[in-house]
Amino acid sequence: MKGRSAIGGAIALLLLAARSPSAAFAQDALQPYQLVRSLQLIQDRIAGGDHAALPMQAKLLEMVDARMRDANAEDFKEPKNFRALLVYGMSGGNPVTVAAAASRAMTDPQSLAIAKGVVAYLNGRPANAIDMLKPIDPMSVPPDIGAFLALVKGSLLAADDPAQALALLDEARLLSPGTLVEEAALRRSVGIAAAQGDAARFALASTQYVASYLYSPYASQFADAFVSGVITLHMAISQDKIADITSMMDPEREKVIYLRIARHAAIDGMTELSAFAATKAELGRNGGGSQDDPRSQLYSSLSNMTSASVDEVRARLSKIDRNKLSQSDRDLLDAAQAVAGEVVAPVKTPAKAEAAPAAAKGNEAKAAAEASADPADADLPPVEGAMPDQPAVASSNPRVASGDPARDTPPAASPPSAQPLARTTDETPAAAPMQADAAPVVQASAPADSKAQDPIDAAVASTRRQLDQIDQLLGAAPK
Image (cartoon, rainbow, N blue to C red):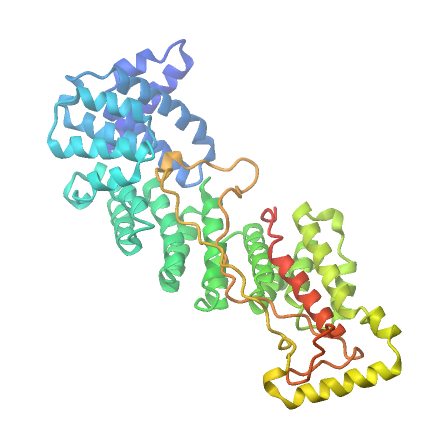
């Protein structure tokens, strides 16, 4: 309580300074560690959902930077002030300020090594930062810098040593529970666990994040990682577990999450997951939602493209109000309608085949029969339903350059889509079924004419190509 009271007094001084012509009063009256503790308190309130504290965070960062630039060697004789400099740096501070202040400080070699590592980290030199920080155990240093050090090291090692990164992020949470450090550590853990294929860890970290930090201004970054993880781990995480996690969200956030899952699952050909998410988005919590959302109608139709009656899918697609869709979803709707139309279009007989005399047709049939007698010479058509492998989209690792809580940019009006959603395309959508009244499907063992492509094969190949095009129409996440 005493510490909280001191921080409250520091914030009161800052408020007075903000109303005065200059902030020099607060900077002279407060020690660097007092300013940094005030900054941490504001950041922890932001992590808990107090968005009104964001302007104060910006003001405090400005004041801390000015105080650190003016600090002299005498100031840094107080160990708490030098540790405050390190915390400021690892909170997203100015690397020039940190480097200049550290050069004036007389302190122990380990603290100076941390300062150099932090400066390298802030300047975008992760290899140098890892070399300098790797030997230092976050649990062996004072807790006020240990939590930040564990968070920074965990972020740096996310790509090269994800298991160690997860362990470090756990240490960060242990050393600083209920803070912006824990919020950032949990958010990073979600993405790393998904990339590692660890469904249990992914579900646990997601549950903990939603329970404590759903209203953080950085929660949209968690949403990106969560949707990406559900797609990546769709074979390992159950729909019941997904529903358990989303049930802790408010209804609107839950609906948006399901819409995004349905969209990406439909594009990736994960029909069961897409149908589940689209239904959840349509019905809402407790089955009382509205079913007229054009986005859920579109994604649900995509998930049924290869399993339901094409006529039913076409009818549903035609009823969607395209004016209520984003441009990327309108493109997706156009592609889906084109695919459905291609499936039911009558097969066109090649003009050359129509003009050929009956005698020539007889000769061709005879030649085909002779060719089928020798399996080595048979030119077999592609197997029905086979799809070419799609290139896998690389999963995005947690950001290294902006691993500090204060450097994570909060969203403005809508969730950011700058970070691409990790998707796996190992499961590719199957070709849409042909109509019952269409020409019979050519069997894989049937002989093929080496001079002309079978018209049914051409139609199937065209349909597959258009289904592949849907995979490329990701666009922006639904708003």
